[in-house]
Length: 199
Image 1: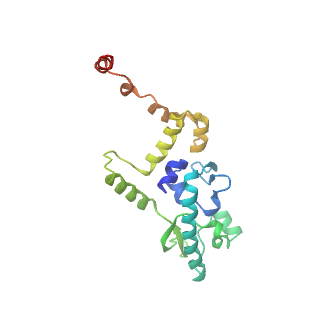
Image 2: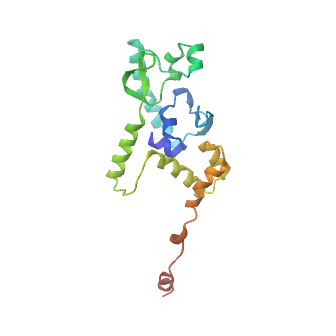
Image 3: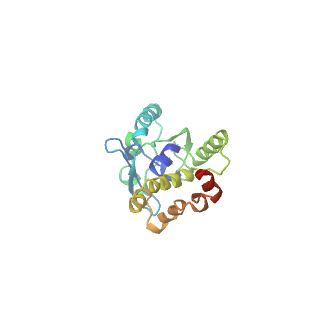
């Protein structure tokens, strides 16, 4: 999940709500549905994640098959689709890419089904990994999205392209990342260091 945050520029909620049908291995892209502002967008699927993601989906398919055998209700669907095609939630294409380990009861309907994982578990894992790596800065799942944008801009990708990949409505929002490119005092060489290099 963390690799998708950084490699595709996804928000945490977008990673959690990914469905099998949203991953397009052939085109190396991810369709992000109902993103912020209720808009869909397309972003990249990193080549380096394709094989690990295929392996992950093979494991998820095992969970799905077991749920089918025990007649577990399908996953939750968008409201209009749930009314129009009530059985679609049982289809493989609609399953969560990152399903929860446990079944849960929907408090609104009382239906027991498999939900997607929760953001809190991802946050805890990132916090633990940060500590283990000896990083003494605050790192959250959103840090990976920020890094995605910053690194693309550092590598001279067009700001409009980065805007589209992030799903920003306005380029002004994407412009926030350009402040990192202005390195300020750290980019200026001290006169003392200049003297030393001349010696």
